[in-house]
Length: 182
Image (cartoon, rainbow, N blue to C red; front, side, top):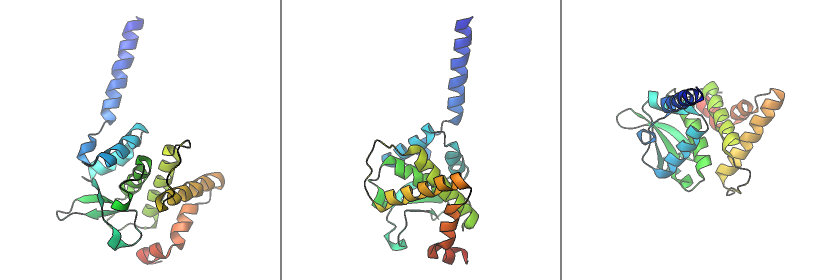
């Protein structure tokens, strides 16, 4: 009887795992991006993949130097398909950090984000960093590391007292004020 129960448990576990498995090569052919997506998958961030699959999103590194100080962005290719472009400056960043950028950008569904969507995306980025950051690792002190640490601090403070510090930060940003017309 124990063998039957054990076999049934293993079967169910494998079936459920397969139900949530995505072919990561559907989203990118870049090994670093795939490694970042594997971290998201291992941590149960299936919503990232569900949104990308639903919208046929591809992810790649791209030179965003002409766009100002941009870490990553959502864009559309010549055929109208969504593409997440991660600034090629961060191609050597740790996979955990790239995963955070993917998590953020995958949250966007509107062609032109609004305050609510940008807040949700940035909170997703912060929460992903909180989950994936390995405290035993010394991360390179880049703009991206500083951004992620700052967002994580804001998110943890928000969780502690109920104030949405990330939304406040976005609302006070001159970049977002111009983008949202506020």
